[in-house]
Image 1 (tube, rainbow, N blue to C red):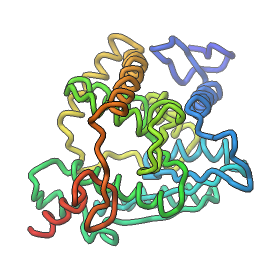
Image 2 (image 1 turned 120 degrees about the horizontal axis):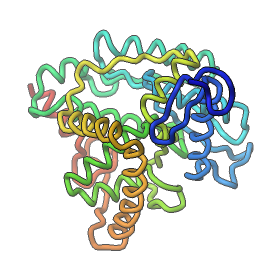
Image 3 (image 1 turned 90 degrees about the vertical axis):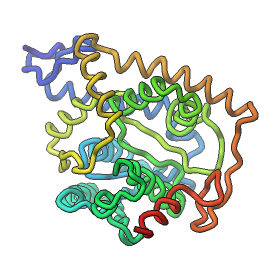
Image 4 (image 1 turned 60 degrees about the vertical axis):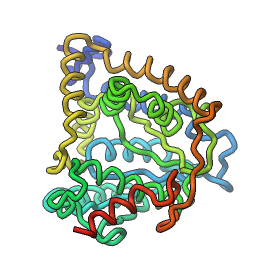
Length: 322
């Protein structure tokens, strides 16, 4: 099959659009959509200047999504004096998995000459995920612990580096799965939080100063297209699933989403289009209602929490008690 735009062989057929694209036009399409999302979400404020640049922290895990994100951001803003970027990698302590992806992070950041910082659960919390997964004091999936710890480190280091925004490599599949999970669970408040955290233009979100705002420039790109882009660009991505990944509900949603997309191309895009509108309305409701929760400083670590002690510190206490 030939490319729709030239006479080269197509490397990708997008069922949701019907497009057949060669390598060059496919890569250009991915980059155009990512840059379009950056403009639509107003990531670069109009008042950004070389004298007062925007500071972005990129969550770089070494997987295909974060590697592709970092590559495209560098291609787009690497020489822009209004933007300062640094990559942050978190080592959870997973033997035979994270070490290889850290190597990919180091290789990419060296190639791009981008500042790169590495932090570890062991140094920050005194734990390793292999031990946490084995002992499991709270009797829950390893991802539940890891998600709390990772979010805490991303947030705390973004604040330490005076970041204006925290950018992560969530793709279209990730976001559509999260949206469908929130809908099926009937969690309207979580929809509102999702919008304020990382959906829509920044001038439509909650202007709270409690957390560094997040952005997801890949959220229009299907996972398979991210993987193909990484392959075609020969990027040093570590494409292996975490051995502790066991989010049963998300796994079921993922299988459902793939089946729906096969039978009805464009399902993921439709879900996100409707979900973002609903999430924005939910955010407006909870901002103007009486359900706002005052955030306090955690008594132990100082991070923002609705309780006296944050979730991270309570989990660490449980782990250390084993």
